[in-house]
Image 1 (cartoon, rainbow, N blue to C red):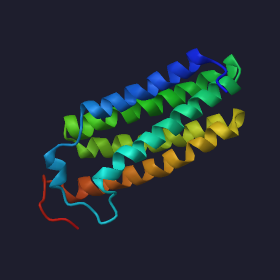
Image 2: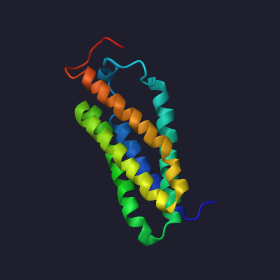
Image 3: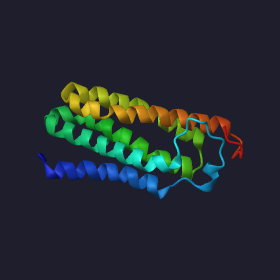
Image 4: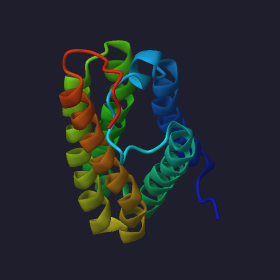
Length: 162
C-alpha cells in the first residue's frame, strides 16, 4: 500500500534521473572492441538487470522514508543521495569521457556508499536495507568488471576477447 504518493514520486524521479544519465551516455562501439573477461554479463542482460535493480533501489528508498521519522531521515538520505549521484556519474565518465580509470574509482566509491546506505537504513528499516543487497552485489561485480576492463585495455581497444 502506498502511504505517500509525493514521497514515492520523489524517489522514483531521483532514480529515473540516474537511469537517464546512463541512457544519455550509452556504450559505444569502442567498448565492444575491448578485451572482456569470460565472466562479463552479455550486453542483452544489462538492461533487465539494471531495471530490476533500480526498482529495488527506489523501493528501498521509499520504504526507508515512510518508516523513518523526519529526524532519522537526514543522514541516511544524504548517503542514499550520494550513492545515486555516484551511480549517475559512472556512465558519463566511462562512456562520455572514456575514462575507465575514473569510472573504476567511482564504481568503488559507489560500493562503499551503498554499503553505508545499507547500514544506515538497517538501523531504521531492515526491510529497506535488505532490498539493497542485490544492488551491492551487482555493484561489486560492476566495479570489478570496470577495473578489469580498464587494466586490460589501458592503451585503448583490443580486438582480442578473453
